[in-house]
Image (tube, rainbow, N blue to C red; front, side):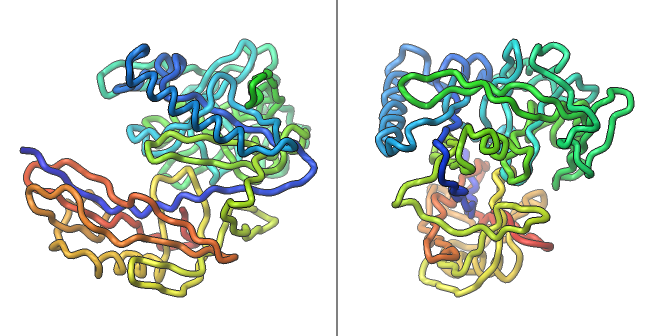
Length: 418
């Protein structure tokens, strides 16, 4: 019988919210996993068949979650915005374990599967591209053709001119296209997007019983050349930057008075989540302040204490909340405190993983053992609230035995990432 590796994944998921008074709140809704657009656009495998008992059970559960969310919203915060046509995010392991949403842009409207990235600012789409991914393959072998954006084919799409204030000092003029050019380089090796800035419409809807259509004028990147991971995974159909720069979608919505300068991201244990713009949270919500640098503001937070099972360590360090990375990266000594804290409380014998696995701690389980007792992990944040790391274990099939690995990556420079 086949057996598995078990990895201890230490992944820190934080809900981020910037607060601003004086605005209504707007939610970015995203497709639910069982809807027709998801079946048609994502062509995902293993979803409940429409009309089946599992299908209706899943829909009922989803309705209960939406109802609970709406009941929690106060009358003053009753206006929300959703992605047009659906209200969920997806964690897709086949593309790198990031979270994705289906967005609708342009006139006529086209849909795109975009990665959600709090670690960058620009929203870009593959556009009139000479180097980009044009299709995705499902695990069943089916090929899904991806939409490619083109401002010339959108009646609302207008290239940003070089003399626009949106162009800024960091960008340059594209002589051939007479438009504001951009290039974004990412941490992944040789991964970048290059193109021009374009003004167009992002189609939204209010997240209430009326579901009114809202067309928001935005600026996005027309990605002509993609390199590296963007050609095979990560963000093959675009990336939705959620940072603090003026060109990010949250900042644009706030500047136009469409939403408060805040948003929340909630990811469920099954990989399905929801994103809300203008969400200022509830009184029960745990919070921690951001460490803001005016020159380059990011979602940088401070951890003051690490609790690993029976071990409590007072240690202050900073980390960036980055939904565009799959794992948690920490510097020493924080890395060693967590990894060694787990190691000291696991009774299974150590195991040396294959060379291609970048994990420092691995353990061998008995042939019939599929789970272990692991210490819990809590992080105390600046301000005193605690954030809990849920389900830090994944199972990897192997032929002979089960194994478990502590999956925290050591980050050798700068701040850690969550």
